[in-house]
Image (cartoon, rainbow, N blue to C red; front, side, top):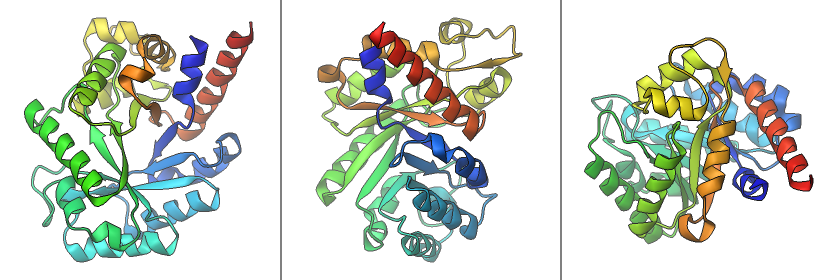
Length: 287
């Protein structure tokens, strides 16, 4: 069991916002060099903040993966300016391209596929693109549309000769995640999958984010994860989720699966939790 859990945690990735970069710097000594750090694309952050965060990641010998939110881009010029800034700090080679939240696109890009098809990212050196996966669906997008989008993006990356990965929305139900992974593989998509996991955070905050992103929060699911909806005090970590995921994960059946941590409870808390959990797994493996 511990061997599977350790394998899942090998080459984990983190997700932070630009405003978290000082906290990332403070925690960097405890993060393996070469760890991928996803940098979200928020309206509240300007171009300078996004590019600076990517540059700091590179300076810390981490791998920046800036997000490009298609529906938030107001023009091709805005996309090019952002990518040019990333290229200046050697951070345009790996991007995560996602549709984004706005119901109406701010500009000419209605979805991630339209950004990838533009070929603009390749002109600035993109060699690998992350794309989004939704094991428990999306509150505003029908399931058949999500599957078609995933298949189309995976096919386009292969056609363009680009590397890629699927990074999923976080969830609380490991069974639902692995069932979805099986469906991905059945559709012929062989890209590595990074399963989204919330780092340790306040239960109230976890429920708030879950509600916002349409993640299942039935009493049975969250109890299986390790907390109760009737008691929102305290914090919860993904210990049980990861152990359950490892118990069912079969590499030959599910393919390349890694873990992607959303640092809702803070970068330092997430990094400390990963180090502690990994140490505990090591002790279990030799006991």
